[in-house]
Image (tube, rainbow, N blue to C red; front, side, top):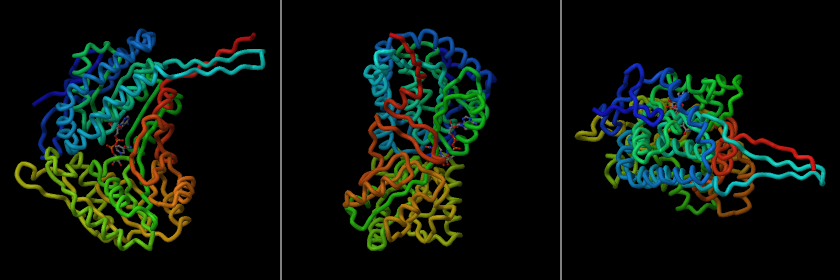
Length: 480
Ligand code: TXE
């Protein structure tokens, strides 16, 4: 069985303690590779290498850094078929999802930030002929980039691309549940001669690798995407160290359908928002608010739409949903469905594990699940489930739905479906969320500020926000 290795100072290394743990293929529940059970000593090695590499990388001309990142993007594209298969096998997502979204986005992230640094600008503030202030931005040092399992290579590159482009070096920690494509990326880096120590990847558990990485005195910047609880833990540990921290956390996003919406478009989008990537995207719309006049017709059409979604072999093109990422996560989601039933929720469709035949009989599949009859304030509609589960909630007025949409601890994203343009803007203005879509879902322009309000996170990434996050401004005042 293949052993995944750490990537430190340009080399593939075993963890210093030589310990590994099992990596599962969620589509059939089998162990198919070994993940380094790294610890503080590997982090020390990686941070040391990154600190040393920072001396030259931060002084490397922009154009050269840009060229190297573009070369990495090219190499991802050349290896895309292998990466697509690996992402699907490691995560359980369909190959179609990996082909259409994850892997192309990984190379796009690199291209986007590799070229963004060439178009950045600096600020100048004149003081009425007295003095000039110019503000330059400089790289900070070693960035700790911690990414989750739902979009493994996509979110890893979303962090490392701006960090590296702006002249920082990186120690990345991919999720221990989906380490494979990060490992393949390290092999690609070696093949193309990416400079040693600039990017380092250390695999292992959050507590054994994440803690020493985030609290290391030489990692002044932390970019984290993951669960809100982990985000709180990192914030608590690092706040006294005054580290620059960006936290992209969970969501319990409302999808609001007004009676005047384009009915078919709203049905399609609501299904996509609820079940893409098995509902394991922080932006998923898991609370579906439907205006009373159309509640019954919308519910029927939605359930019919969901009944046509196929759950099955992630490799097969015809399947819409693959496997959940892990057995633990599958059980957590199934537990939430049971809790929903106990609270009086009515399962309109799904609500159970899907047992497939043959080699896939031990895979972690859940049928797309639609629930009605639960109040907005019950735990099911308040806690992130992060699975293929959506709750239908009727509403009467704009004011009522705005109040319910905002009545959670989260504030990541929201979608509004209406043909009344004034209402669309009005509701968007009153929703507490970092990202609001009108008549669409997940339409992403990489230039926009991405992130959430309340317990969905801290700070924004994307476009120039990322370039700013990974740099420190320095103002120089010159007396004229
Ligand atoms: O995430 P964790 P988990 C949500 C989702 C899910 C829940 C828990 O609701 O059910 O979080 O998932 C690393 N220091 N999201 O437990 O643990 C970890 O190794 C530093 C939403 O899998 O937050 C991994 O690399 N790092 C989300 C990363 O944090 C630590 C995506 C995320 O894992 C650490 C994933 C520590 N002490 C889950 N402990 C989104 N916002 O998209 C863990 N990690």
